[in-house]
Image 1 (cartoon, rainbow, N blue to C red):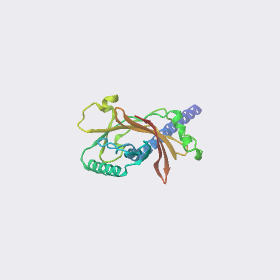
Image 2: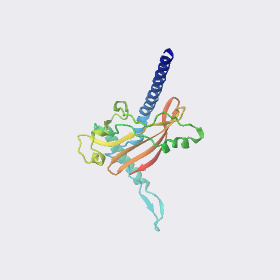
Image 3: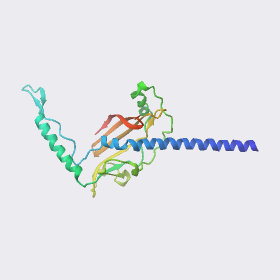
Image 4: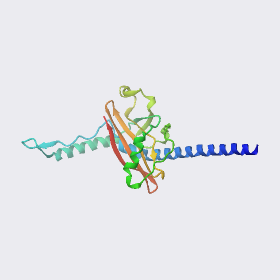
Amino acid sequence: MRFKQALVMISIFLLYSSCEKKRTDLEFEQSVAYEIFPALMDELHYDTRLGPPSPPTPIYDSNENLIGYDTIVAENTMAEWQMKLAKFKADSVRLVIAVDDSTRLLEKEEREELLKYFSDKNLILDTSNQTKNYKIKLNRLKADPKLKFKYRSEFPAGSEIWSEEYDFHLSGTTGFSRIQFDTTKSYGILHSGFGCGKLCGTGFRIFIKKENGKWIIEKMILIEIA
């Protein structure tokens, strides 16, 4: 009888330990995701009221060969764009970003990109559970004070999000995937992107690493564009 009781106690202990490890692994991943989010938004977001600056005007010779660019016009255009940007930054308009309610999952092939990119590190993939997503907590998303985050589910589905009239400026949509770490939890990979209209958006493969005790974005590779 005592032997059976001991087995039951051991089983309960092992199950509890396993659950604790899974919870701890997920909490660690979430802390990293929220830590890098401000830097991620700095890279992804731009004020869609203004748009990117115009490219420089090309100059061709009589045979229509490209010989350079009009740098004077380019400098004037950039100066005007920066003035407009400064005005937008100084105004009181709050820019709303629609954020996916939950994280996305990474495909196995994508997770292995971590090994390829950091091939000189001889990394081993962490085998923690990556089969479930988790709900993103908006109150843990930090970014430019002008930005306000709302769940994607609060808006119309699909491209209809861009057809609706709002009493605020919808500046874009975003979200991010689960993070695949290596076993040392010093390197990782995730996906994210930014939508700016019905046929406007980008998607990135993002490599991160821990440096001097802080998580930083090592490189962002464009893999989708519309």
